[in-house]
Length: 510
Image (cartoon, rainbow, N blue to C red):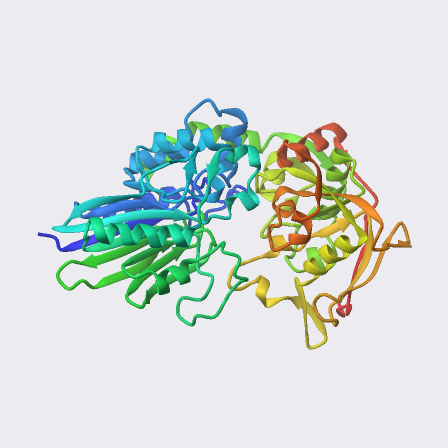
């Protein structure tokens, strides 16, 4: 008899089935089709297949699906059902299209939804835990989700939904399982990550409660396996007898944890998605994929501006006119005085022939717009927080290493239009905005403005608490991608006076 229990898990797939980039259609080592090949090769009678959340949103395929084909079954649930997932957890992005959409998706996968800390109208959305007899052993599975979902999600998408504290819930569930079930092994699926490096214990972020994996491993007795996600990081190892993995995003890795039931040795591995994609999985979503590709290549307009992101550093240091365009669109849409936007990591930008592919590959998140009422004091706090993106090395401005590790945070550098300002990176964080004017007039602390930002920033995402605490004037339900596309369709040829309103010093010698 096979004495190995094999736990295969995916996390943060973000609607990624096909093994290529939608920005340029070039092959990439990721996607559920590649993982499907490995899953089929590795599966035996003692294998359990799990998903750790954030499955629905994040790719043009699923974005197009919910814009144009929302009455049809999501291609992700079709493929996951084909792969016969046993359990599925809920991620924070699962609510991007509303609770009813999430519930339908969960039902369609035919997998058991595990969630101990997501309640709707007081009732659990899924099972608190489940027990499986595998290889003669009793294995308990449970799942929790980062409880900060309300911090980021639109209220109407989580109406009636509660998120009790993930750590406290996990502790309660483990104690309950041990008392009532007496299992041989306990497996935790956590759609959250490690607030500290699991090996060194060094904090990688502020203790907001968003990620509690380290604390769970250290303080909850009885967990044997911890499968994390949410942060889009890569972790794999064993600490204090607990095997753990965190497998990046978009299906870059398959988590494979093997339990030897004779020795009780638990071996965690992350398997790179470099196999040939499974043709059966590819075929399941082919028709919708073709529609998506056609939609992505549909023309919207033209531009004579350079809106391509040539370099991750330079597009922020010298403020790409792509940021100016997005701010122009947000200002026209909202009528606000000031607009702020990031350029997302690996955004390709927009070519001279503008298509939906360029727009959606550049603005890749399902954000909406929020208008906030702020004063000059809050505005300066906002800019100071954003200015923490930079650092100085050998007399030259560089990207703060904390923005690269332990996870990429380029989305937390906003560039504003409607004001002019200077960032002196030689100064300590919190004192870097050495000049701030609007139309050439110095901004005073008691000046008031309306500010347009995306809903992630409006909710305080990225530790921008000064924005979340500011009064909300109104929220605009249209997706930002739709807003950008409609603007381009309306104006056809995109041409404007470049805005060079941000100065960063020291000025690097070119």
